[in-house]
Image (cartoon, rainbow, N blue to C red; front, side, top):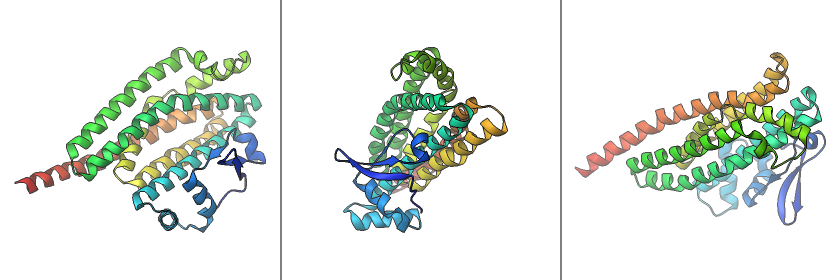
Length: 287
């Protein structure tokens, strides 16, 4: 794995962050915060040949089990893919819409973070419950926990999606009062969140895979949606389909539908049969 030279590690007020430099600084408005494990991964990522090798390096450095090491490595990779998507979006927007649309994307990303935080709380809060009951071989409780998580996530998302569609200006003005910027950001926000409900399928599927110690599937579907769907569409829709800035923002809902559906369907087709077999094995042992 190669480490990009466009990000420089800095210690800011005791916090280790990756700061963009050069052209990347213009295309990525933000910093990547590194935890203790994240800093170690960044320093040693060029030594690794595969995900398994990266996990092994973490195990040798820290007193953690393999599951924790895998989770830390997976989280770091997913964080970097988010940064990659942001850079690609801003690169295309700077050409198709100018600097003002980079500001629009910053606002849209900020609204997304605002909306996503409770979803992360719900899914990450459910994750230990799924893990415990899966380890304890209680398939019915795993399914019930997953259903409750899904209902809470869908319910919350329905409320926030309605707010975004019906009153986008209210959310945008949290981050900017500039009337021109608000006017440009309103249609962009609606386009970006057009199919956000399908993103719930991604959250639920990835959380389930991660909680049941299926890290490779969680990483695969994260990379599939962000790297192999969003990034190509970010260039294809504005340039090849001549959709301009709208193509950048619409790449997100298209990826939500494709990636989210694929992740969720795969989770159902692999996890439910496994839980069924676990229940049958428990019943056989109990006889």
